Image (tube, rainbow, N blue to C red; front, top):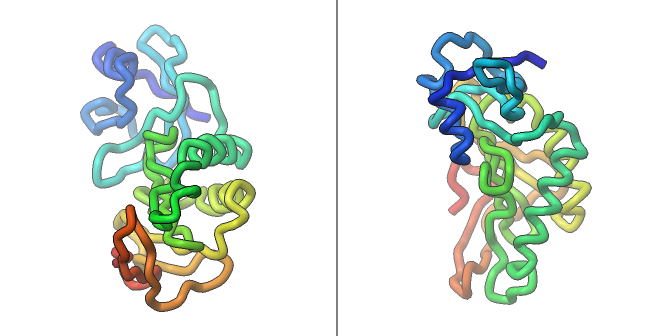
Length: 194
């Protein structure tokens, strides 16, 4: 794994809990689409991150500890996210909600939404997209009740925006509930779902 040294300004930013890395944070670094260890100017380990260009920022600090982006790592993140959302699973008036919300759940660049029995993965940069099979495998271990999944490509560089990923295909249109409000949704028609 490559290592990058950051300025004192960036070190302070990370110490405050900010996890999005901007281009101005890493001016002299010519790495992309890979996991890195973040070090201070004097070589102190600051955390595990990955670098990949997206709409906002060029990377994310993922942990202040050494981690590898393995299936076990993602299973752990997904279990924690699922536990936090248990009240939604028990709410008869809600069948659509966000299962995993980027840095709020420990990994920027990825969101996963649930629409009834189907999940939608949104990939926000090419690094996360490159490890998508690993992420989906971990997801299936933690969320076996999800019947099928789709993906949305939210970065430039691929020739498609939406695709079926695994499992059963959802009906072309179906209805979900959000706090008792009915919404008609569609899983595989561009970037939007309804």
